[in-house]
Length: 409
Image (cartoon, rainbow, N blue to C red; front, side):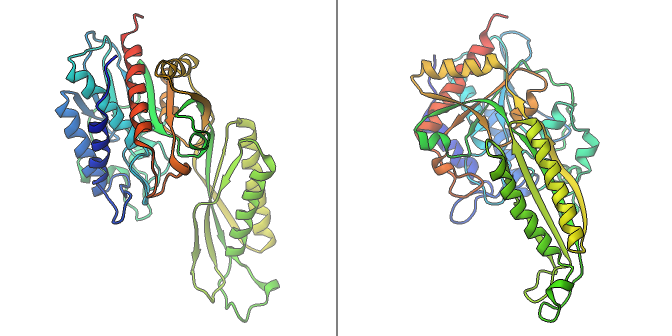
């Protein structure tokens, strides 16, 4: 089995990290911004240097194919290169560049597998600028209408379609009926489990369900000093009550229930004025579909009741909703076997974050590999993974892709 060039691979991660680099460390490469364009340009140039056939589809997904010896559907890997505003070097980028390092290794040695191997860069995985997250892969597999995605607006009213045109990545390749043999995504864990337990490889068995809901509470602005507490219509207070309720609900459910209030916007947002408007998001996650649905119902019921009690109106809308996904058992087992061939300990585990792999699982056998995140930090400029773990994960990906691409049937 060929070995990757670890030094070259690590250098590529830092090179891509220059696109949208933040002063003092980290990366801001929000989807479809100028920084995202520079990252895309860098990735496409690298793909072409590796003699890959590059296509761009109507939602801006980039797919590069390293031809096989037979005309068969490709084995695919990849991830995303868009980041949150204060991201690190590895979230998403690791999976894309590991895929390109696999191709570079095969090309160096003149190796062609039976099936082609494809590396994908999916558009707007993070959902930090445009919702829902995993937008590009959802459109790719046909589960989000293209026109709905293209007309989605960011906070400033710019649409996905307009921004794709502006940066030159609104391609012509059709979406919705992909021909993919298998999909395997390599990613940092983005959590503390592997690092704390000293285990180098996570064998991902599935992805927990995700529910994002935005609540808008509207009350009455008034003077903070002259309005008695019992006569207030305080939208900010209702938002705070919902925040604590969601937190306590997750603790009460236990198990794998997670709840996060990640965005709160108050109007007029002044120290001495009662807020007349609060917009708050609630992120609920669970590997159990029924428990997730129950949590959604409880959060909604509480929000409506709290608003009524405080003489505040309540509106809500879904920003994203995905059921839990179980990955293909044969791919999960293959990841574990190949890790053991490398002498690596593994932990079978779910993914707490959403990934493009959960969308690809709708159209082909799919699996994921995790490597440790130091102290569990991600979506953070201090996100880090040990170089040895990064290199071992990439070597593992190479072996898995070759096994799949060379299998006889």
